[in-house]
Image 1 (cartoon, one colour):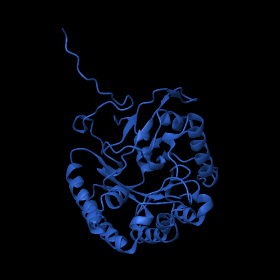
Image 2: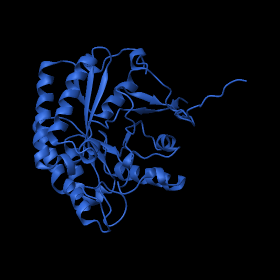
Image 3: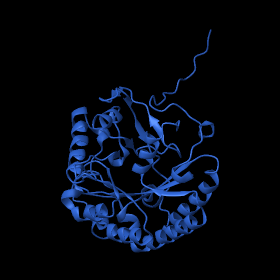
Image 4: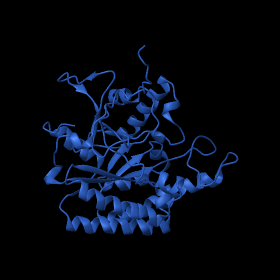
Amino acid sequence: MEKEYLKVKENPRLPYSAITQRKDYDFPNKKRLAIYFAINLEHFSFGEGYGAELVPAHNQPDVLNWSWREYGNRVGIWRLLKLFEDFQFPSALLVNSSCYDHCPEVITAFQQRKDEIVAHGRTNSEKQGLMNLKEEQLLIEQTTEVIKSHQTNNNNSSCSPQGWLGPWISESNVTPELLLKNNYSYILDYCFDDQPVFLKSLSPIKKDENNVTKELLVIPYPQELNDIPTIAVRRASAEEFANMIIDNLDEMLLQCKEQPLVMGIALHPYIVGQPFRLKQLRRAFEHIKTKMQQNSDIWICTPGEINQFIRSNNNIQL
């Protein structure tokens, strides 16, 4: 009698791929390590919904935790903006679309720097993976329309965001297809790799002009170099978080000799915008700047620029 073995369910969109077995390529100007900074600009509903907690909440309205998060929009984000201006680093602003009503001047300040705006849902008080199909469709459509109505391209025409990070990185079984239908080009929900890879669509969507199947590009998004899981969850110190960034950079500069790599750094203003943490983040930025002066392999960019580069080079095989 033939033995039966457990079959583990695979992700049908992401077949296994070993990084050591892929075709080599360079980023622009023969760079080997792409570094991007993701700043999460999040707005939370008062007295309801989800939200990161500094201390356990016992009732609503949860004044303490709501206030802690709101510090990021009132103070922390402006400190981060100054830090990025001091180092002349570009950033990707991952925006809850309700911020356009709540704190529009923040988004304007980053747009004036020509930073990228990435869609991050309506608010981080909700999770799209818990919604039914119509609710999730509405979430994506509303988020896209709000951001599109507030940004223009070089021809002063409205332009939609190209990238998406789900609130709480929450997805349903059809999220990628819904994003494709709303003309998204890349997604930041996954942390499984150090290189961009294409996410296979389960329901192929064709481009009108060339009848070419569209796929979302996955830009690696960090869950280690990310102040939420590192500081808010595992309670690492500001110094430890800065050391993680420094050590990660130094090691990846060695590894990128073998493969081109992406290093993302995810920041939340209500966490690293606190003065004692900002001081340590500045130390990490100083290390990055020094390495840039010493090493020609570093490309400081945005996730959108990585997406554009990959899609404009047909000879790159992911």
